[in-house]
Amino acid sequence: MFWLQTKKFFVVILGAFLSALGMNIFLIPANVYSSGFTGIAQLLSKVLTDYTPFHLSVGILLLLLNIPVAILGWIKVGKSFTIYSFLSVALSSFFLELIPIIHVSNDILLNSVFGGVIIAVGVGLTLKWGASTGGLDIIAMVLSRLKDKPIGPYMFILNGIIVVTAGFLYGWEKALYTLVFLYTSTRVIDTIHTRHHKLTAFIITKKADEMKNAIHSKLVRGITMIPAKGAFSNETRDMLMIVITRYELFDLERIIHEVDPNAFTNIIQTTGVYGFFRRD
Image 1 (cartoon, helix red, strand yellow):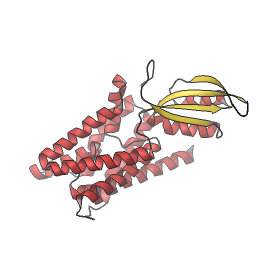
Image 2: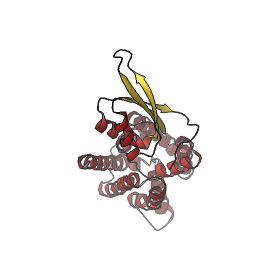
Image 3: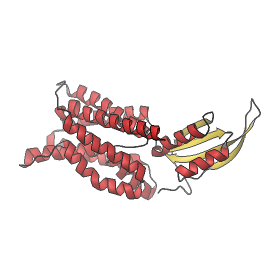
Image 4: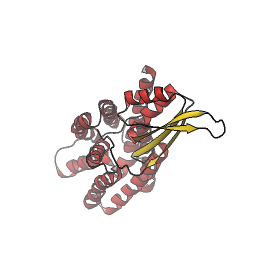
């Protein structure tokens, strides 16, 4: 367990570094805006610099914006998830201050694409290891749980506000390149992790009772046990069906690997859940 948490910690550090690198090398020099609270921090930093005598860096603003969100996440989402997510935010803020802003290319399209790829790799790795980059991830999760709706529309609306504001203040060309960044980063994150908010796992194992107890000790999710029989081997086994959120996928994968590495697991997209699904 200690080694697993250590690897997770280093993955969060790597993800934060890549996110900050993509910002300071590609997006900020090109005035292309990121998604989520990072994009809001970019806009606020530029507005303060251009229209007021005050200046706050993107890193400092990102940290300040995430403090109340971390408190909300601690109450509504979960302590472990929130701790690693806020750690990711704090490290991103640190690296944003540490890494110098360098103009690598004057081509805005190249900056948008490469910035999107590098940042998305960082975000995707962070999500894959059971954390997030904070900000809108946590807000969207809380909003989604209130009505049990997909996160996608909330993320789209919140990011749409960033794009429209950037276009209104600094030109619609910048807003369009921000859309290029959003598309690129979303595609890469989907490749590394998953774009689906809810997932259904079918686990075929000889250790059904151990698996059930291990899942219940870590996740607050119901499990349906279905008798199964191998068509070729004629062996009788049990199949466990469980619906989870994408943020619980990391924990479920670790449980399966620890209890029964030989278990056959099929994880599929869940477009909707009708009936009781615990949201807190």
